Each structure stands twice: as C-alpha cells, then as structure tokens.
Length: 304
Image (tube, rainbow, N blue to C red; front, side):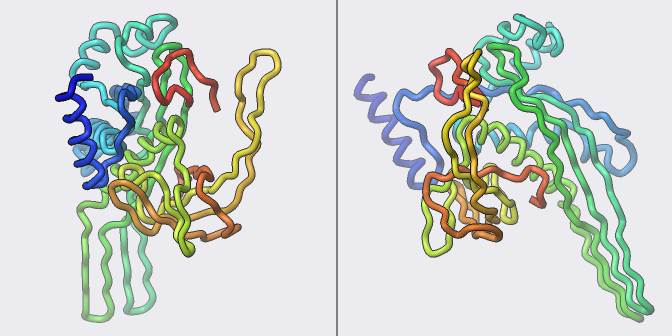
C-alpha cells in the first residue's frame, strides 16, 4: 500500500469514526450484495397505486444496505442488464448463478401484502377513527456462488394514520400522509437486518446500568423493535457432511430498542433475565411492531 493510499484510508476512517459510520479493517473485502426486482402479487389499484410500486421498496432496501456499512451494493443498472439478457430464473438455475460476476448475495422476492383497515370507535357523542396500513414481503437471499437460497422469510409491518376525534360539536383530525411510506421503510430496515444479522450477527457490545448497547444503529433498527438475547453454546455438527447445523442456544430474555443513532442502539430488558453480558447475540423479531457453514471464499462474512 502506498503512503498516499495508506494516509487516505486513515483519513476516511477517522472521518467515519467522528460521525459514527461503521468502518471495516484495513484490507477487508466486503460482501457484494445486489437487489433484484420484487414482483407484486396483489391487486395494486386505486389510492395505493404509486405507494405500492415495488420500486419504492427496492430503493429503500438498497439505501438501508448502504447505511449498514458492512456491504458493497451492486449497481442496479448493471444487474438489470444481466437479468434482462438472461432472466432471473435462468440466472438462478444450476450453474448459471455463476454468471453474475462479482456478486456474493442476490436479494429478490415479492410484495405480498398492502392493506388498509379502518378502525372506528363510537360511544354516544364520542367518535374516534384511524387507518392501519400493513405492508409485507416474501424475501429470499441467494448465495450466488452455489445458487442456493440461504434465507427465506416473510416480513411485515404496520403503521397507523388518519387519526380523528369527534365529541359533540367538536372535531379534530390528523392525517399522517407519511404512514404508508414509513411502513415500507420499516420493512426495508428489517429486510436489511435479515441479511446483516445472517453474516455479521447483532451483538451486545456493552451493558451499563440497565442499558443494553447493540452493535447496529438506525440502518436496521428502529425504536420499539424487539430482540431476543441469545447465549450461544457449542456448535451442532452433522456427522456425515460436517455441516454446522446451528448451535446450542439459551434464551436469556427480550429487549426493546429505546434509542438509535448511526453506529449503535440502546435497548432495555422487557422480559427475562437482566444478567446480560457483552458478546451475547441478539435476534430481531421480524414480525413485531417491531446456521450455515463457512464457504470456500476468503471474503469476510461468508458465513450465513
């Protein structure tokens, strides 16, 4: 490494530390991730036509992956060109997955739910109403080297909008037009978390007077998110194949995120033991209101 390149790296690293952006060690090669097109499997008409366009969610997911700071995100136009020539199914079929040069993981799936439910309470002269929006996706993560789907999950989130209150001759309304977009953004965060925690687990990095410090910030975590705190034990290994099937785990408790910033989050114990120490792994509840074996590649983060 030349002096100029070395100096440039440490200058950028110092800036990242000052502003709280996660940094990786010198010479560390990051996993390269690509977000493919998401299909829409429900009727997309009327009021929600623009908001439920899968392009919105795809763009949000890419943004969250960049903010995580632990991946390189493959340029969408290059991926579209490859998939346009070959088709997604052909690319994922058998050895054809190897034709996506330079990509480690491909994310694709379907937008499976976008609903609005009006809730209303009437008691005499008192009337209260709101609308609950729910957005959901089925997401798949493919290891491009093998063509294997390594993670597949359903992720959903809900937000409330259009709150109104009427009592007698008095009426008050507050329509939150951002609720639809915010619902998508929460799902995008959890989608990014699915990949991030599969490669670089969410962990407790410090405990201070009841505050549980986690090693991810607002790139994948939101205030109100709930996580299970896991104490990991010995690996469980398949005798014939040698594959690591998982590990013996003990559930210590559940925490809820109370504060997020760029580099880390703070949570409080809401259930279970308060005897939680640094190093414990945390698993995000993908449905709340908020094991694999090492591959041949030498890239950091090939465990998923």
